[in-house]
Length: 96
Image 1 (cartoon, rainbow, N blue to C red):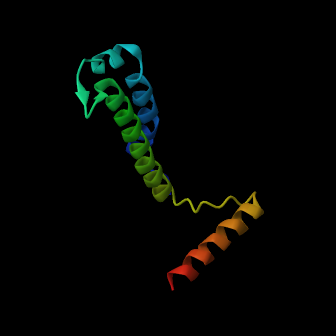
Image 2 (cartoon, one colour):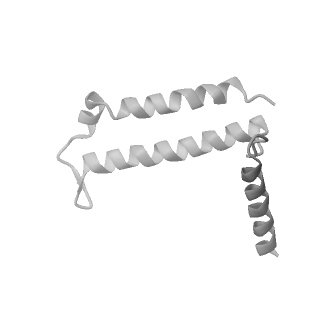
């Protein structure tokens, strides 16, 4: 099944927007004399943008894989498939 066009567009735009937010004109917006818990606002803003970018990327990635029906197994790499199968068996065994 092919992922929806909207989620594909989101996956394309997300890294572009994240990169743009780290360019100097946008960084200067956050470069103020304000401190949060003794930490300069610029550092808090940069770290927050970075963390939000990671979380959004994880959400979009998971949704893309779910919509495309990806199993995480590549038929060209049998060792990888065996490792993934073993990991799934171990997870199921530890749940019981």
